[in-house]
Length: 251
Image (tube, rainbow, N blue to C red):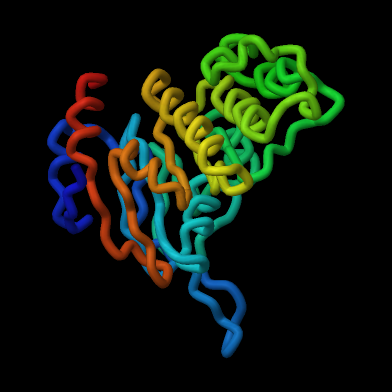
């Protein structure tokens, strides 16, 4: 069951008095100048809360990936406010951004970016060796149902299995935030559903704020909120009342 609301008047998320993980106000990103100027973000106001599973929808060029890059500290806004907890990402220096990305954010992209010469376990261990409070690589791979494939190399795994290794690598450091850019874009529909279920399980069991860009309709039913982008702005969003009721048991 999806319920459409205006972002400016939503009270359901703030009723529990939770502090946002992210707070964006007037977030703007401009590329180029003059006649070549492109406004990738044109004044985004958005609060994202602990443990939410958010889906970003919108046509190509609507600003979804630009927003995801801002949330992950991979790019900086041209104007506006963007805070992660007490850290002002618009004012952070490179050392602060590096710590933020290393300690707080897990990234999942369309392409798996696994090292071919390393096994699934070893690919995940690359992250756990530098994380503050990681789970064991075996634990992370078990969470995505790859416990039987620990010592397989990427070439011995299907595309869906490789993407689940990438998910295990991202969640193994127990990040507060998981950012996913078209994680099923290179997969068929059936395999994509398996991958999305792995992401949903990580969100549910680890309480990780999860933001996903996807065109897979199944993900909308799994999400707490579906946020629609158009022309660099939040056009509207839908809140999944059924999922919200189940998720409230976590808090």
